[in-house]
Image (cartoon, rainbow over all chains, first blue to last red; front, side, top):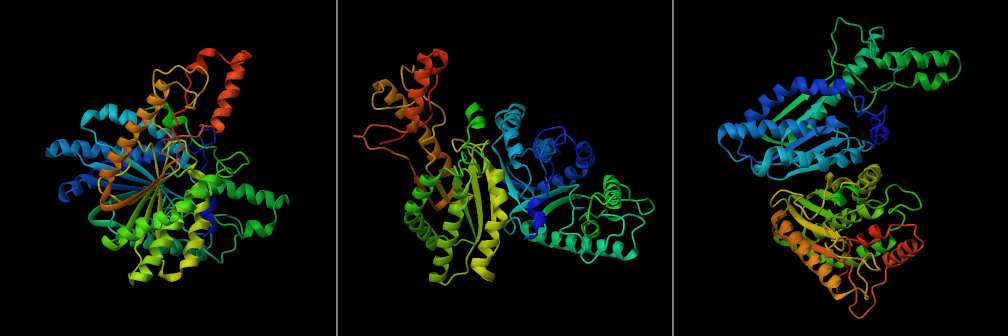
Length: 260
Length: 260
């Protein structure tokens, strides 16, 4: 098992530096993509008879965003059910992230979340079953044909691993000044990972099911400048000041790819 | 939602005082009950055709015991499959405990656990899907007819709440010197809770499915002396020494019942 599956995670808890308190952009992305999620769910809900609506959120992380999809899906299906004069289904959600994710934080916020759901939806609301499914989404996570809808927001830019056999001369990840071989290596790793992801999900989602993936991309004409570029620059400065061994910085690459 | 669903949990982590390092008795109980689990699983596995074997462990807690059932079930089904010359099924496990349980610890131990499973079982081993399902088992946790086997070990002595309208004159839980009204109140609460538990599980388990429950009981003729009795005595001593307000100790009862 790759070591990064175990050690990689967003900052846990609810402190100032936690992911929970530093994920406004991710929340904005989810809100922006909501109409697409809505379109996909309404389409599948009208063609598949569903008594228990099974949904997976891959790369849910922790903090308030982790339950955002649950809220959105319930609202959308509730509204569709009213329009179609159908009894709303029962919901079973599977929140997925790597093994090191802070699921405890999500679970501690669940009682209040479920209570307010019940208050808002009233007696017509059947139980909503929320589970956590830890593990990398580059491996199987669910049995065959066991999901109706898969969602992943702002997560698929995390590769299964950084491309191998690269030598970092300046940057810990891909930038516009990176050599063509590095661009090619990252693109190939992304293509390989994305193919694996789609193949695995095609086994897990029922025929006629839906999937909405929101990816962190970039404009081809723009320079690739993110917080990681700044961290890379700082690490290189530390090498120059002999605080960090050249070997480590030369062999360290982020497993992130922003497709264009 | 009852407050105890949120705040009650075993000591998290892996420290000296953690549940993980203080649950030898619970492990012994599971090992002792293994032949009964085996009998139940072999019976249902021979009468129901199962492609994906769905199992819930209710009150799994954290630490090494949390994955003990997973190991046991896989071993039992693996052996049965060989005997019956069947392809082993895929497994989907749901580990349940209250919202405050330390699921993070379980998840951090999963990569190594899954790796050693794969090593032991070799290529014939299909993926094993492990989920967490937080919440009280006195409410619905799973959709209708979604489980083949339910297991709960050393957990059902935890009531949904302590009986109401009791006045504690000496003990924070039931002892042999407790008044008859207190005995009756605890017994009635247990009966009520256990009925609810069975009713909910009957909705969640498929027809022909199995269930093994191991309860912490007591011999009717024996005195009820546990660690809780000692803690109760200490609390009462603190009241006498005016460290604790009489009101609080008089209104505090443990939600534990050892049936006989």
